[in-house]
Length: 441
Image 1 (spheres, helix red, strand yellow):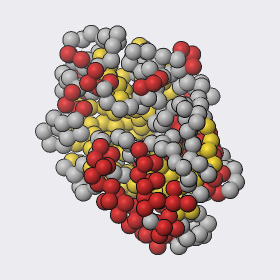
Image 2 (cartoon, one colour):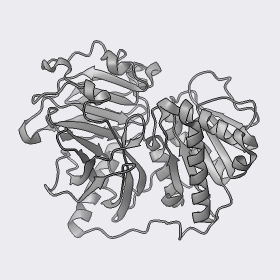
Image 3 (cartoon, one colour):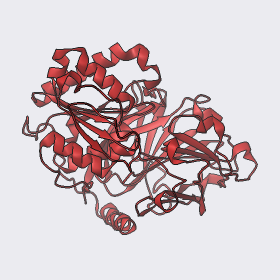
Image 4 (cartoon, one colour):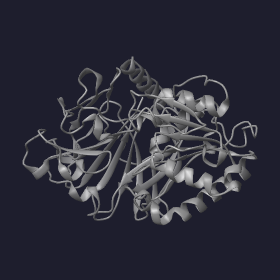
């Protein structure tokens, strides 16, 4: 069913590209009858960003929310202990701006993991702050002896200790869902929507904006600090749904990145595929590939590192192989047999109990030829990557080709059923990095 849907959407995208896009109506703040919808603010956890809430934001929009009033409050999670006052002040300003723009009486807050520590402290720090929040959703994070700041609270819990709770809150348990999955799943969305709106959602799907132009915007950020990339150029290319190759040598959009790394909004065909490339003088170009956005998206995040710094500096590079990062906002399970996930790279299933055990909570996979020896070795994960939160690394030889004329064949077998195929060019790692974003649904 998933494969049929992808093929149908690709066919629709091809028709739209041939005929020219018809602009579809996208709700805006001005069109929303304030205060019909309260602004929604998501606060991520450790090493996180707006990406964890990307699917849920589009589900909210599929149920009538204007995307303009759904935002994420991002911060430098490794340094949270020293910047907490600034994070609180920034959230104060964000809430004030959204309330002024929408005319709403209050906002709704959601937080995940470390973000629940941040938000519980925020709501309890001041009665005035709590008074501006209508609902709080605590996603698989800290327990509490009472609803923070007295704000009505929904607490959602995944696998782990079933005794965890926020006393006095509505506590919902999904023991078969992993840590990040509790943020992105259909089941958690249904509970969140019912809590915020006091009714069930019309749909838990992302409703495509067919035959129309969606708006895509976001930020290019340094991982994991969420500082903006400000020394580069962003290029956006429509790509083939079959190969991931560019449909034109000329980018559809080309803009400098500055300040907080913000870009867009860009008009895109909702059912087409795109490449976003961060281009920096004297450094490897970082290519990001996405499945069709389906509808407008303001939570796009391009996570990278400065040349020679961060995890990127640990990736071996050569003219002979391609280096991949494959990420999904739902953990990869390589040790659960038929109840787990599969990830085939050029026909080889690279997940196993050693590199992606369920307890690792992996959402990002680094795959490259360790040592540049042309040999794949999956007997053990690469320790410098495996030691990082939510990340694993594996030694996989992925042949590159001159002028990226070849294809890396990526197939995802989703646990619970369904397959996704996301092919990308086999860029040389000596001059390029490749990140592939897999839908979590």
